[in-house]
Length: 336
Ligand SMILES: NC(=O)c1ccc[n+]([C@@H]2O[C@H](COP(=O)([O-])OP(=O)(O)OC[C@H]3O[C@@H](n4cnc5c(N)ncnc54)[C@H](O)[C@@H]3O)[C@@H](O)[C@H]2O)c1
Ligand SMILES: O=C(O)C[C@H](O)C(=O)O
Image 1 (tube, rainbow, N blue to C red):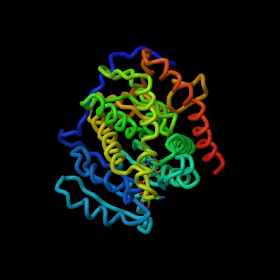
Image 2 (image 1 turned 180 degrees about the vertical axis):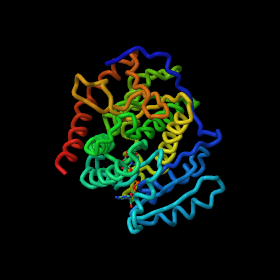
Image 3 (image 1 turned 120 degrees about the horizontal axis):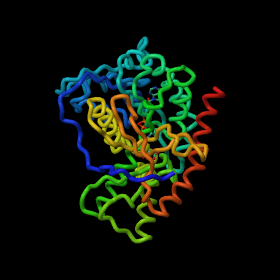
């Protein structure tokens, strides 16, 4: 389950500044709380040459607004009312980012969103499988631990599945962990976060951060804050939704990583992907260290051998939770 760490370089990142390749990015759910700032950040990324924005409503306004920003990429916006609107947004896409779906309100778990969001993700994944089967899918819609298995099953059914190209975006957990540790260290450093994207399945690996020394109480508190950072925002927004701006930042950062890998850079990321790491436990999806190349996942790296006993226990606790969500997603597509 755990293997040697292989000199993995963990470095703070910034967005690309290199000259662009041809890269169309589609955003599904582009008029939403995440969709709008995410589209804005993608418009400012020089690697993005075209943006295809889709939502059930309001997308033309978002596209017109963002389209005035003086970068070279072209922007178009489609709604469900446009004939073939979804198809037009997806055609030729290299990346498809999916933040479509409802967010949490106080008192809800991410799994409480399943009944609404499972069908949305299934239908959007179906359109991707038909229109741009070779695109990389970046799934933000919650519950990620189930929506990624859902998209996977849709692609399998359509006969176009490539495990290297479907990602659950867990970057917000990394951004949060980095920020919370940054408050302690007085500098921003990358903190690996593995597992999944809900409560106890979110596992920050503080053991991998050099120069960070925590008492057990500090470690417990920091782990809890990363695991339940989403709830902090849901509570503060008091019924108006969940994290949107930090998620847009994290999603744009992950999209940028894939675009940099597309351009030939060696990129190490963390994402919720199909993996054999926990095959013996019957688990197919886990967020772990992923090397990226132009085809998506180049290599999935095992968890570092030197993670702490505390972190090993967190992994053990996460596995049954992850398995439940995975099975729920797979069954949903099987039964619908
Ligand atoms: N992965 C993460 O770390 C993370 C972080 C934050 C939020 N989320 C999730 O992202 C999702 C979106 O959050 P939000 O705050 O942007 O919500 P929001 O309600 O503000 O926006 C969602 C958008 O999706 C659109 N939509 C709904 N059905 C659609 C469909 N069939 N096709 C296209 N668009 C559709 C809506 O019209 C809306 O504009 C939620 O499920 C939320 O839980 C995930
Ligand atoms: O907490 C949520 O429901 C949204 C998101 O998954 C988050 O981590 O902020």
